[in-house]
Every structure is written in C-alpha cells, then in structure tokens.
Length: 296
Image (cartoon, rainbow, N blue to C red; front, side, top):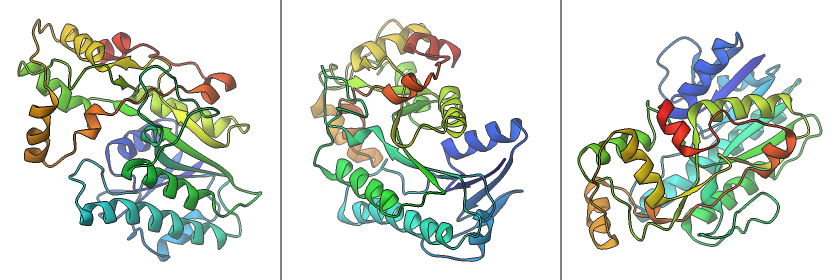
C-alpha cells in the first residue's frame, strides 16, 4: 500500500512509519521539518505541492496537532485547537481535489474526549463526552473531520489513550519519576489510567486498515484500564523500586507549572474501553499492564 502520514515525525508517527515500512508498504510523511527520505514539507494550514501525494494513496493517517503537554495559556489553547482544525481542513481540501482519493482516512483524536470517570467504562456507544477545554478540542476536531462525507473515503477517528513506548510519550518520564523515588501515586490515586502498548497501537491501525466494517469513532486503548495507584505500583515492581513518594495535588500544581505542563494529564480519570476493536476481532498482544511493562 501507499500510506501518507501527516504530522508523522513525532513519537507515534515515527513508530507507524517504521512499522509500515517493515511490512514493505510505501510510506510518505508530511512534516514541517523534513529530515529524511520520504519526508515532504507542508505547513499544516493550506494546500500546496504536497497535495498530489494523496492522489492514488491507499491510506491517509493524520496525527498533526500541537502537543497538549504545555500550560493552557490563551495562546497555547489557540494553537492546540487551530493546529488540529487547520491541518484537518487542509487535508480535506486535498482529498476533495483527488481524482483517486485514499480509500481510508484515519484521523487522530483522544480518549480525553470522555468525562472523568472512575467506575463506569466509556465505550464508543455509551461513553459520555464532556465540556471542558480538552474535551471541546476533541469535539471540534472530530466535527471538522466528519463535516465532509465521501462515499469513496472511509473515515475513522481514533480516540487514543496514553501510548506506552520507550522512545517517547509519557513512559520515559514515568520511569524517571520511579527511579528518582517519586513513583508513588498522583493525587488521590483512584483516577483510571487508560493505556496501550506501542506495538498494539501500530497493530490496531493495521487492523483498522484491513477491517472495512470499522468507521466513525474507534477507541484505541487496551481493554484493562487501571487505577493510577495500581499503575505506579506495577511500574515500581518492574524496576525493583520498593518505595515511591506519592505526589499530592498541592505538590503537583507547582511542579507542573515549573516544567510547563498541566496536572490534568495525570489527574484526569480516563476509563476507556475498546468495544469496537474487540467486536471486530482485534486481539491485543498486551491486554494487561503488567505484561506491557514487562516487555518495555
């Protein structure tokens, strides 16, 4: 297949590029800073020479958007939202202009679209989407993505949880906390952590490509979310660290401000379940967190 990944030079984009190339697919990456073979420059805001890459492509995957790992100042909020809306809109323009548009367009979203929930699982059918900055970004992003329909293009928005991998994302930071003796639970510790191993993330997208019945919203997360206190305990066990100082909210707030992030990333309860993937027959290699952490 010919696969185009927009915003494909980050943690997840690099993993998908390597994964698909290992399967002998042709992969081209749209990025603001081309660095290697297959990288093509784009600004993520409007049409350009890059648009021709989509004509005749089999799959388009859009991961573009400013990282949410930042302080939610007015300027950052604007960038977080506009980077997602404008890039999705630009890709839609390019798809509209294709004589042979991609058969499948997978667009990123986030499991943070669902409300803070500790006891109720949020699946694609009954999950409740809430109303705050992060949730509203997801709603606006998905609305822009699904605004234009085309019978020739199957569309899937992936609500992805925390992806665990050694090469980026949250996991290296969590390892550092554990090794520094700060690997206790954060806040009350009862907030649920939805997660997925990086290999299962790549395999899930492979599965979505092959399974033509999947469309609309799809949760891409392991089927067994765990409480924050249990997740951190499992992490300490894997690194043979017997003790971890817990981090209460009053300590997390100034710490988050110091390193330029928000406590929401640690304190929000994401209790998300991949109902559609399981119904379609996807089998997780790492369905429980202990197995995932052991492999990592």
